[in-house]
Length: 198
Image 1 (tube, rainbow, N blue to C red):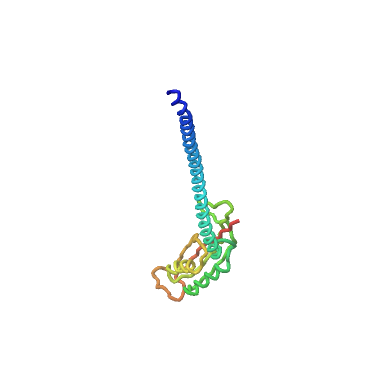
Image 2: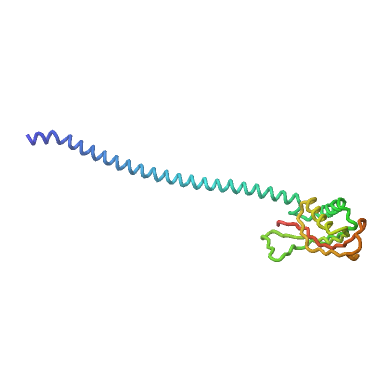
């Protein structure tokens, strides 16, 4: 009876063992497939994050470039960047004086030279130059000097610096002030700054 039972059970047991083996192999293959696909997914996500970061950096760079291009255009249109605009400086000085009506005003615009200041450094390929302008003025009072410089600053967008100024009173302090002629004389040197990006 044992032999007969074994004979009848032999085929189903073999089928069962083969099924279990196939089932185990399918589970192992499934885990391996899942692992491979998970690694591919992680790699794809890493590539996506990297691409997104590159894209974000590009967008930021484009925004910065637009900002710098806009600033550069403003500086160029104002005359700070490019060739010196001597005529516009003189026109600005004369239009400011038309408002102030200083007793006397003479100027001498000297040739352009390199802008030098202690500790002032420029980037490679950028030349900062200045054109010195000597001003001689007759003033009714000290405030006229500040009014002239402020008027210049407001009337033109070019950058200028005041290098030196001296004020002299030709008559004694005790004498009364004249409202029609100069009570003070002043000599100033201002520098019109221009940037030449080579």
